[in-house]
Length: 131
Image (cartoon, rainbow, N blue to C red; front, side):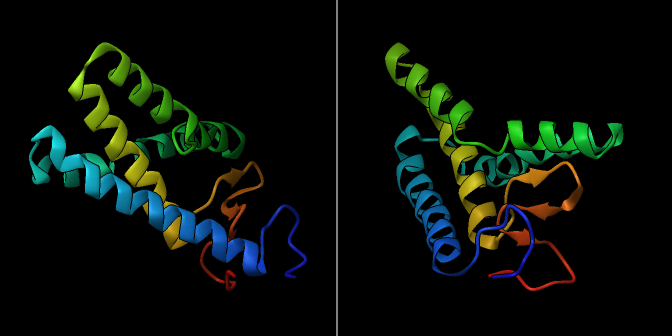
């Protein structure tokens, strides 16, 4: 254990990162079904990081903004709505969004705490090692 409050360590951290990798892989597997450009996938893959602009309002606002676009709920809802309405665009965007979140989790970028951009549920970014 690292002693950092609210940080997942050990095997549970490995499982969370593995889930992220699985989500990214599923996103990459299902995306071609919508016939969109891979260039667009790559460009939109980074779009959720616009949530980092919330940090211009301080760490508390930044954490809320970042976490809002880095949780599974919104893209899952978008994907479900896309399926229900037969909207392939919504489905494709949801897959890219979920792929971004999966990529972040795989790389150890977790949900943020209001104490610091670097304090995440998967450990501290930078300086200190993550599990």
